[in-house]
Length: 146
Image 1 (spheres, rainbow, N blue to C red):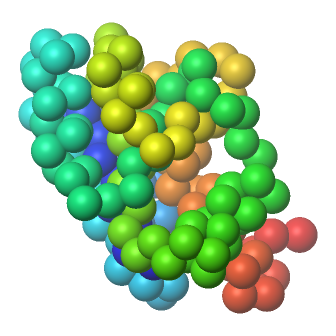
Image 2 (image 1 turned 120 degrees about the horizontal axis):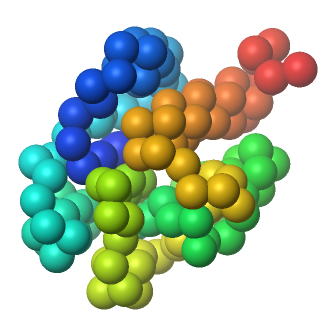
């Protein structure tokens, strides 16, 4: 499965940038994973950029109003998409400081919440990447997840 991580703005916090780079590197062992940082603009411009960049992918929008997703549910979703539905490309969309407008949320195939709390978008990026890595290690029976 090909993961496309789309995020508004480049990580600028040193720890977030390092974490994102580390988990992107780790994810490469499990298939294709790419991260694209899109220029920040208005909420409407951000939505347009995210929709264009995720065209042709199964869209998962990360939003605090989404379904709260634990690691087991994330694994079940990836298995269902890849095995049952034959989905090959999944795009995870992380918005900017103003979040996602309703039209972007309605264009999503899935709405996930990483936490019931609102997360700063750089923190959300690192949490998402770590969870994708964790799920891939579980799927392969590797010892990362204990």
